[in-house]
Image (cartoon, rainbow, N blue to C red):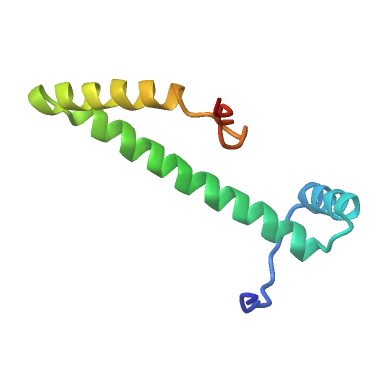
Length: 97
C-alpha cells in the first residue's frame, strides 16, 4: 500500500535545487522523489540519534547492583554472539558411522 501524497510548495536556494536536479538525473527520478528520499534519510538519522542518546543516558544512569548485573549480562551476550555463525547457513552435521 502506497502512502497518500500531499502536494507542497518549498522555496529553496538555487544551489540546493541544483543538487536535487543532479541527484534526480543520476537516479532517473523526480525532484519530488529525491527530496522525499533525502527527508526520510534525515528523519531516520534523527530518530537513530535519539535512540543512541537515550541508550547512552540509560547506561550512564546505572548504579550499584544494576550496573554489575548489566555488565555481567553484556559479557554473557557478547560471548554467546561470538559463537553464532552469521550468513553461513546451518552448521553441517557429521555423517554417522
